[in-house]
Length: 287
Ligand code: SPD
Image (cartoon, rainbow, N blue to C red; front, side, top):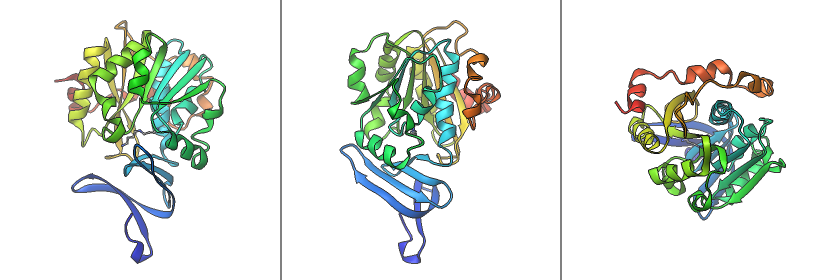
């Protein structure tokens, strides 16, 4: 944080040597070095509470719903009947909150490496972390790379909600990890994953989709507008174990059971999110 001497305190996440996002801070609530990363929670003037890991924005009160609804409902409504769901990372609990809205879900397992993130989010973001007390949710505090070694054909949907590829999340962008995810999925299984900024990380988007195509039968990128993430537009993606018209249309009937709880996702957004600007489409297609 900077500017203490001026009476105004600001947080900046630097996106490149010449650009960043700056938010005015009311109060620092948490500054904790866990065994894995620096966890900070700040109360900001414009975006409410902000969670950062190693100085990178993870969630804010104001726009976390966009990310969590798009990471969750896109794969969950593509799959015909998701019962067993895996979340990798996601220690704030936002994806779990969205997953348990689906009546078909029998069990949602979250594997998060850093128990301190979960503990602090339960205290400071209770509305985001609300599903940790849900009876269908199991929290495993472990390295997902180790956890997945013994998991075969268990899950219908896997949501990879890691941080950016620095620190403990580096391994979550490697091909071998995606192979482990594919192995952990049942036939017909669907994965979603956050990829990066199309403006700053187009190469990473291309490389990630290439890994997915080597491991899954089908893969597509989509976009969401997340104001506090670098460049404000974020690339996510889905991959499928089958090439059967998968990554097919969302299930309208199931969507209607929780539509009134949503603030960003709807069926038009689902369809439109896969319409990619030309250079992103080419990168995602490996052209
Ligand atoms: N640079 C932002 C990438 C953040 C991805 N994960 C956010 C965690 C929210 N549950």
